[in-house]
Each structure stands twice: as structure tokens, then as C-alpha cells.
Image 1 (cartoon, rainbow, N blue to C red):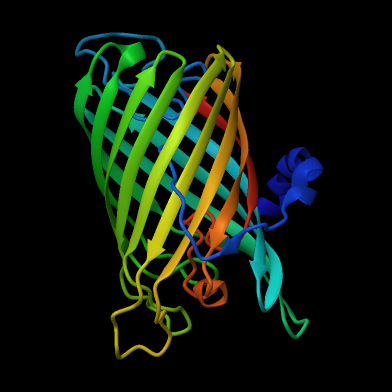
Image 2: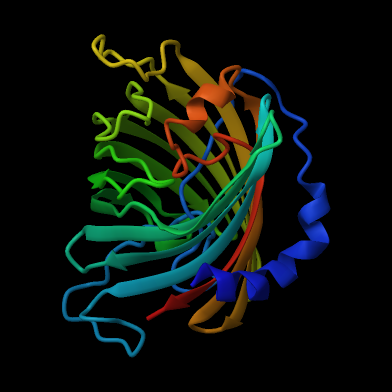
Length: 314
């Protein structure tokens, strides 16, 4: 499937692909974000979790009394390793459903193609490999103020289910977190923290890791009704593995950070185009050993990337 869809989206990315130069320093910190705007690009880009509609409210743009978003995204990542180089191309499908009852659900699934050349000049490639399913259930805990000045606090939990092998991790990781945001009319700020309780891989070739902490922050700006912009930053901390009986494991703590600018263009009241990239500001000193841990769901783990996709809001 990627083989046919990738060239279409890659055409829009090709003019910028030469910019994937890794200027990152070794080991460091930074800060990420929450997600872009709901219903259409006109909304504040980083406030993903809308306040639920009032009970009994009816709208032609609602689904079962809530709001539903579906996105297809193509991501091209450059792998910058000390002992090799290559690329990782991922096609993902994700969704967000906000109910009337202060609850929301997120899901995501991806497939990937990878090309890697090691230090000996040997090429290793995989095509249309299945990824991992992500499922999150969240609770809109607190809401203060009117829509254009609203302050929010959300808590959530869920899991990344194990993949079938290949490029996807065979771990099952549990996720808990909290997010808070504040809107200022056409601007918004957000801060969040995720904690991944990692499981044990099913295959011996995959490296075990410790728990993952991600501190996120973001800034959003609604330029016009059809143009929005967000800038995210994140600091990731990966603990060393505690399984003393396992041979393949990460034996030291890893830290890295990234920034993620995103441009959102409203094509219609229910369709938006998102384009952007993820760029490492600091990289972990043990990037090579992290590759075997298969952290494809963590932005900036292995290198810079460009992405583009369409979002449908119902």
C-alpha cells in the first residue's frame, strides 16, 4: 500500500527533502506538545481535546453527539547513525473521537518501509511491514472560561499494543499522562507529560528498555480561518532496562529532544492539510543501540523527518 501512496505524498515533500541535515548536538533536553486543532484549521491548533458539547445539542457536523477526526499521514524519516544511514517511511491512520460526556478516544495504526545501509555497505530493506496499534482513553477533567479563553486539564491512559516483528516493537507499553492548555483568542499554549510503562519484547533480537518519560510543550497560532500554525517541543528520557537476565537491553539512560513545526491549511470546513517536520535539537549518545529497541512511535529518536497528511473532521 505504501508503494503506491508514498510517491503521491512524497511529491509534495521532495522540494524540502534536502533540508534533512542533522545539526543536533549529542545528548540533551528540550520540550514537546499536545496536538493540533480540532474540527477545522480555524480552531486553535494545539487544543486537540475539545470541550464536550452540551447534552442534547444537535449539529450537522457532529457524530453521535460528539466530534470525530480521521487523519492519513505520510512520514519520511532520515536515519542518522554512527554506523550507518538510511530512511524509514511510515503511512499511518489515526483518529480522535470527543464525546459529550467529558471522555475522548484516540487510536492510531501504521505500516512502514525501511531502507538501511550499515557500516559494511550492506543494504537491509523491509516493505509494507505492519506497525503497532495505539489506543488512548482520556477524561476532560477541568474546564474554565469561555471557548476563546478556555483553560483545560485532561488526564488519559492507554497502551501501545505489540506488533508482529519486522520493524515494529513486540512490546506492549502502557501509557498514562496529563495535559493542560490555555487559549488566548487566536493563540494557545499547552503543557503535558506522558509516562510509558514498557513491557518485555517477545523476540530476543529486540533490545529491552526501561520506562519512557516525555515532557511536552507547544504554542499554537490561528493566522486566519484557513491557516493555523503550531510549534511543539519535547524532551524524552528513556531509562535503562532492569531485566538482568536479558542479553539484548539498553544498559544506560538515554535523553534527547526535538522540535516539531506544523502548518495546517483548511481546504474546506471539514478537510485540512497538515505539513511539517520533526527535527532533533539534541540526540542521545547511544542512538545505534536504540535502533534495536524499535522506538518508531517516539519523535526524534533516530533522526529528522518530514510529514504531510489529510485530516477529515465530522
